[in-house]
Length: 116
Image 1 (cartoon, rainbow, N blue to C red):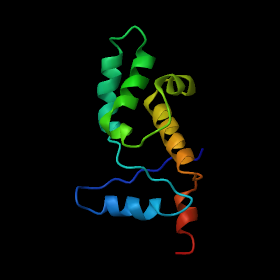
Image 2: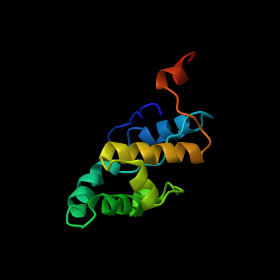
Image 3: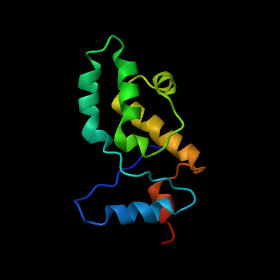
């Protein structure tokens, strides 16, 4: 999988419109806002109190309100098996799963913008 890129910006700056425009391309998948990196620290801290921290982290991430909006066909055991438990690995699996569900392939942003 190509590495994901991030669209960031201030409130009311047009990032949602940019997401919609990019997502309309047949080969680009830009899921709804996940707030993943805002919340992952909370889930990591919470999971450390569990007897299986990695499984707890995977379960909590998939049960997160924003991640549930992605409607991923993935359960915590799958996520557990596919990652080493780091935030970046979890995010990559979530992104790859969403991409596959949408029937899209990963492309580089510069490939998408070439010719425009």
